[in-house]
Length: 256
Image (cartoon, rainbow, N blue to C red; front, side):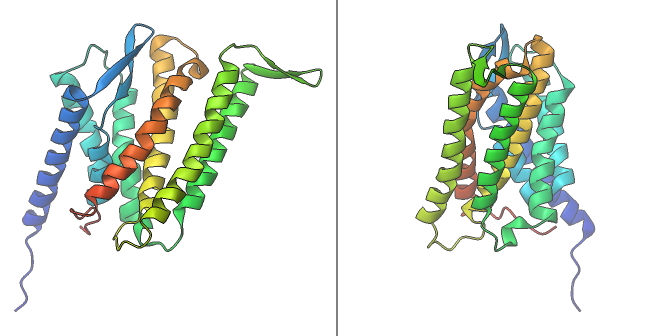
């Protein structure tokens, strides 16, 4: 007679993995990350604490991934607030890392798709750059006057140049890395991981977290973007590479 795996065993396995990923996220975020102050408050965190949250969503699904994000943020703040104040928006952001990666891998199962997501990554980055440009125009940071482009903010021109460079980098880099490893047998291709990291990081770290910081610090949204965009140039490729490397030794897409 065929044995049936107990439901409790399944739940215990998920709980153990979720607890482990939350603990790793807390350690990496609260003890092995660097805070860059903006306006006298810690505003830009450089570290790897979000990687376990993305993995939690990929491996355990959006619900568990979201819970792991919430727990890691709340418990981590109680253990080490890192000199900052509690703001629930950041808890939401942490949850969304697991939720979105879980939806993409457990529900939409993009890792099984034959589509080359490098093209989607490129389109997303171009749209993001266009959105920043429109935001700068609607807030009168840059204006067209008498057929000429005028900058009402001295940081506008460097930011436009930065956005162009970042967009070009994120369009070219995934293609280059995917081409480098195209002959390797891999369960999850690099383009799928890069897509997941890019969409989560751009939406949450660059948009939502910058919005929360502008509210906390009473600073303009645009004024906070340059430093965070520079950080993304390094963060997104590194996050993608680490998760891609881990996918070679652990199963990141378990079916529960």
